[in-house]
Amino acid sequence: MRRHRCIPAALAVVSFASVSGVWAQDCSGWSKLSPVSSPDGSLEQSLVFDSNRARAILFDGLLGPGHETWEWDGSTWLRIAGDEDNETPYSEGRHAMVFDAARDVAVLFGGNGLDGHPVDSTREWNGVMWENPQGGGTGIALQQHAMAFDLARGVTVLFGGDDGFDFTELVDYTFEYDGTAWTYIELAQCPPVRQKHVMAYDQERGVVVLFGGSGSTGVLGETWEYDGTAWVERKMAGPDKRTEAAMVYDADRGVCVLFGGVGEGGTLDDTWEYDGATWTLVDTPARPPARSAHAMTYDTARREILLYGGRSIDNQVLGDTWVFRCEPACFPDFDGDGDLTLFDFLAFVNAFNAATPNADCDGDGSLDLFDFLCYTNKFNAGC
Image (tube, rainbow, N blue to C red; front, top):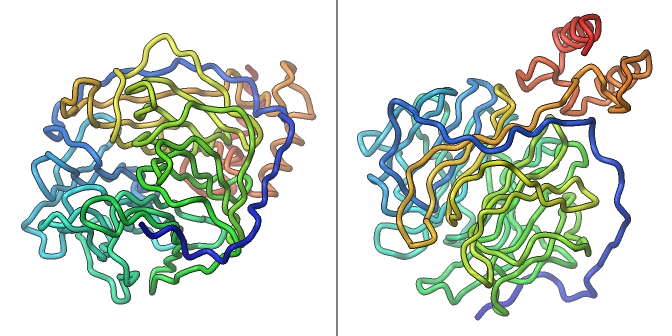
């Protein structure tokens, strides 16, 4: 088994105390939806949110209809592409996909090929069709890897996965893709080899967050962060060890949200949040049934997490759709102290000038004059 290509070095371990979170919030929790149309169900599929078109993009996974692309418009699923598209990805699942907000395209890499072997292939969805970009390979075929889009640097970050046929060739490679070519990043330190882990990009802190997976020692449960220069392990209490979970970044509240997966004791149905300092277990009145190999994305237009499909606790393929909502109890109370004062307005102005995601008042994915007017109107209206 290949162990790594990172330059051997003592791993940097950082510990830090809890800090206060974002403003007060009202979590209505998970809700199951009943869309008019929906994919038949699959697992190990990929789901991202196209902030430019306000649509979620789903590419089919294992045991699904095969090579289908679907959109979520906030109320139902729409099939928009299939094998009739010549550049449709030929992965059967176990791929990874991100939305490149700098170029307004969804980027999908790798996965399980038609012959059961991993593939070295990149495809991009431009909102109309799949394209095969030049320089679209890393030189290494991978499946069960994870990716996240680094918005500040404008690159897709890929880590880990399996480059063998029987899940015995786990790697700890870090690659970056700028829309033109994949580049192998040689680092002094990196997480141990793994597959089936999760990654999300924390916009407020400018780091890729990695959690869990399975490696040469079994199921894993560490938290790592990558700032474009180095991987650093964050030592803290958190979720149980798990693999095949799903995690997204809630840009409005500044937290990574993780759900489900398979732990050492079985399939899980718990929801956790990570604010950069502390993992917190979220108690919700309802939740999706325990599952693994599902897909999630954060819908910035509707300010909710979208979850689809996966594998049930009794190994059934799922095709249900859920959303998780956790909205500010009073958005104008920007500092979360329970009082609406000039300090809240100043806190918003500072966040707006610093271009932090929670200043996107109208939820359109960009910061402009409309956000300032939006907040002014909300502030004048009170809580």
